[in-house]
Length: 339
Image (cartoon, rainbow, N blue to C red):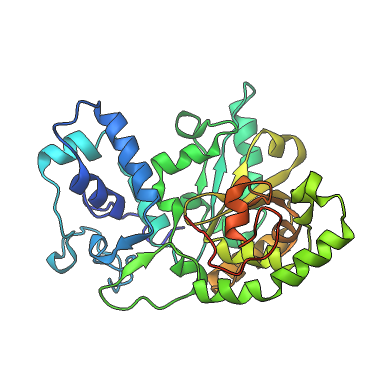
């Protein structure tokens, strides 16, 4: 059960709603759904989220949930008008989805990932629901919050392989870095999506030697630079851990065939850092959940052995910029690119 089981946030309560009403162009020739989609995309690519958009501090400023959301001390700083509600906000998401959005937003300190079902097939609906229920119960810890974080709705989430579409409906999943690194948020600050840059710099210490050693061991590396993204407890994987700010569990067609969950870690702009399959294992899932709740970086099978996302591959210019490498994969030592 979520922390706020009967709470329906007032309009404008969620930061993305603040972004929408503050940036909506009523004179735009674009249809409202198109303009809304563009603004949501802009929102999830913000580097920081102004704290004034969430005067409740992820709900923590309330000693207990306020079921009426009527306390003026915590009112949204920009109250949407009736017209903005009817034109911008209400057509976008149901109240049930907004309730989930609020729970997800307030979860920054616990790190529970969404479990997103993206495959519904043509078979018996009840059988698909039964199997999905088994996946949510693979961890007692996760099962306790599955009513909020398990997304199982054909009408909303039948995405197939395009799971990123979930950010259009629930941009709150994009997260903030603070929940991952357990950083204190000073008063009046913004919520950051940046990873811990000091930790990132520390992770670069061993990279130059590691790259040179790998190139010597794999003399044909220039034919496929990505072979240097070796699995294991390496400097490269440590950097990818630090760049990761959140994660999501995907239940796709392959999951229904193999009973292997797809674990996806992503960065501040929702680029995949590492992804991989995981057999149903309560102990391992519980360990992952506990590590995130305690502010630790992701470790283990998927992070150390999974597939590196396209944005971080050494065959791409973006990947080389992040790892501070030249085109010949020589370490340059200047700042990593996260944009």
